[in-house]
Image (cartoon, rainbow, N blue to C red; front, side, top):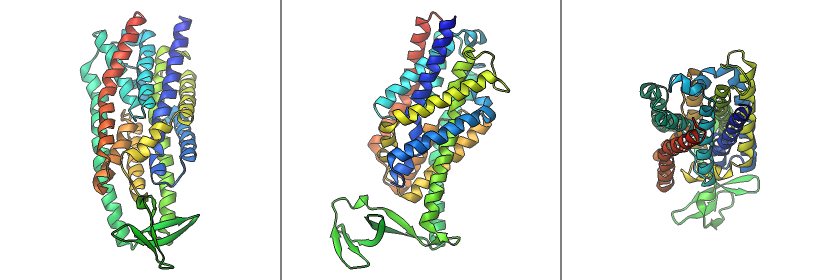
Length: 378
């Protein structure tokens, strides 16, 4: 029995690492995509804020851990079998790691749900009604809400900016200075200060910045600070929302002894170790997914990037507090989809690939978990 507990703990840690490698970039993708923060610094920032969210989950997100332990979804006798959490951990982690290797942002939440469903089906012990109400409905609705809110919020922010007299200009980056320029129909850029005309092959590489003041403060500076804060909030919310789902694998197996989250030292240990695993994955193996999220889905300026982060952070933190198992991936990508629809710069081919990865996540995880369950003699 000892080796089974060890295997359960190992499966949970591998799943935590896989989660960090695929999900941590989602908190800072807009910082990278808008070129506000360099890739490596953004990744470290995401790892730190996600870990803080993981620690906060010890006190704020107990309901999620109980849901992802499988109770009420499959037969109680099945959950009590140590092979159950091991199979969930292995099925979900292999699915997420595979997606990370090919650079596709998928949902760890979906992978865990798929693993639970796969085991439940193979054992004829799945409560379809409970699975639908606790998992499927929130997972299906959340990205649609994100798309809608991001599109509406950006239009609102853009209108408000114009009424406040904050304008947008394209700039030529010279070192650390920004020189206002005018871009002609042929792509030629004329510097306002000197009248010198420049020709660039990739004019879209120039940054757009906002001029004017907001409540007495430089508008661009205000937006930059708000953007970084929203990215931190999103990374925090991701740690808060995802850590209990993964720690549930250890808790269900009784790796630390005991069960439940309220006042349980063992459960706190599981959450803490999960947070460490997520942080490590987010530092060591996240760059492929980061590039897909930051540049592959849509082009975005600072205002659009901030709007996507603001909506995602709000939805994820709100859902975590209510114990709703929404996917950070689906909400984050959904917000980017919404921005891409509004600014008409969405990359349809990449969005199609991401959606295909989402559709296949659940069945792949279900098959892998079912095979593991069978091999373990569950």
